[in-house]
Length: 386
View 1 (cartoon, rainbow, N blue to C red):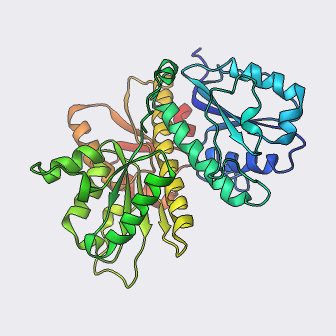
View 2: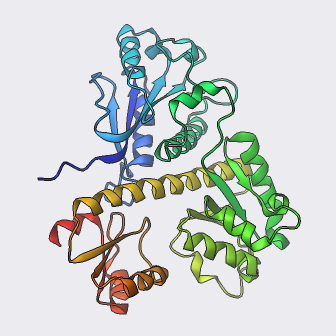
View 3: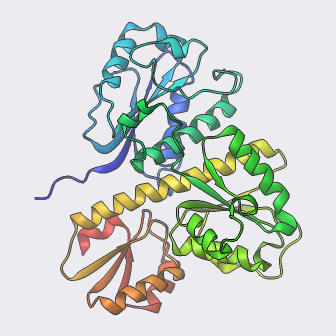
């Protein structure tokens, strides 16, 4: 019998049982990293999230390949000897694949000790999060930081020995900002300034980041390949050749794509290849809107990293001499057939396309299956039936 499947990442959320908002924060993190706690059958990342509050059960870091231990440190947490001892145990678990992420929810949090003195805390701009007065704002900050940190962890980007080098740790995630200059440049520039001033992410902005004398198309392709594409979808966007090229390059390279809807009057023709991607509407309150765009983008980055590794594990577990597996990290679409037919020319086995839960509706699968009966699209739940 094969070993039990080991998931790529697990989250552990630790908070003091007297901290009134602790359960609410934990539930919100569960909804972000696993699935909507109010709609458990909804599509989500599916990352396992465990709670530690009333009962401080030891953490088994062998449950997953990597672990993120999140400490919600408020006044109650700081003065409880039991939680201080537990924190020391958790810090002792840290290695390249297990990281502790302390979150400062009171002014004194960074002085708790317990082995956390040399670890960077997640905090708000004024030095701490006043969780009772700015709960929603603080929660958005926490989620954005943790999505980025977990992406870094899944990318094996920074082994622990490099922490001691003392140099600035670069971001593993680069945002490629795609826009039509005629009606999208002003908003895109504002978003660029926001990201550079408020986050630890890197930005590619073609106006200033393409070197003089270099081929424009090759520079775009090289930067999109390892980036998340943020599309500022304005009225003029779909009519611009280079905008369409950027989307197609990102899709061919299986990058994260987020579409920011900023249509004012409409467009003569919608570009069809921006479908099957998450969208978000640009709001009037720019900073709030930019935070939401950033959070959704980081969510997509983490989703692709996690699903890619998870689906590969399923593929290994259910190897079959009669079929050839192909894994994709988003719900399937007709665009996938471009790569599938190339593979089919070289493989004589039946092709199984494995994609994340939950399964598509019957109406979409019918279209995909009508095109080629020898290519089957399934989610992991159907693997035992092969």
